[in-house]
Length: 209
Image 1: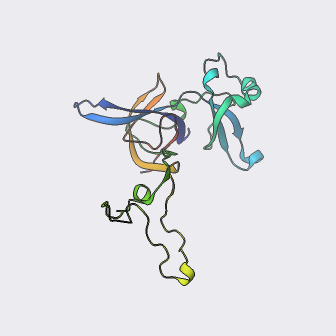
Image 2 (image 1 turned 135 degrees about the vertical axis):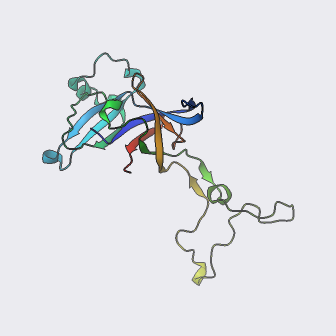
Image 3 (image 1 turned 180 degrees about the vertical axis):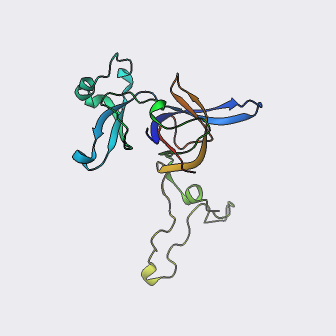
């Protein structure tokens, strides 16, 4: 069985345990992922399975046979690879389900996704700089300030925090718990917040204790 599985983030909601405690959870949809290619150590040098997310207009197709997958190679988006453990057998056209991964309720997992993009931001929002006085007489306000360090010819050291593009980075959150698994609807309910916005691809990996 696979130690990880791909899904898309639906959003956040809440569930209640048997004691009536409210638990905030993020719902991850595992549906609509199909095996598009199987790689072997003999042919490709490593064992992996390539999976693709079917485009919205084709998700009601009656059959996803190996021949259909090969003919409709352009009908998949967000192609990803998963490591294929020894002894796991998956064929082209196989629809991925929660049963393909060694995940159970109560398991501790890590979630990897792309954080929400914030565009170009200044140092106050991007790095948490305090900024200068907000009074009318101030000439500083939200500027980054000096960056030369009195070095030769005003040289700026590498790695200094400046304004720039914020967000849209790969982030991994560890120590999350699977609260509930809905096998009928193909959804994972994971306690806490996951990186990214709606429809972000999330890699859920079982975390070693």
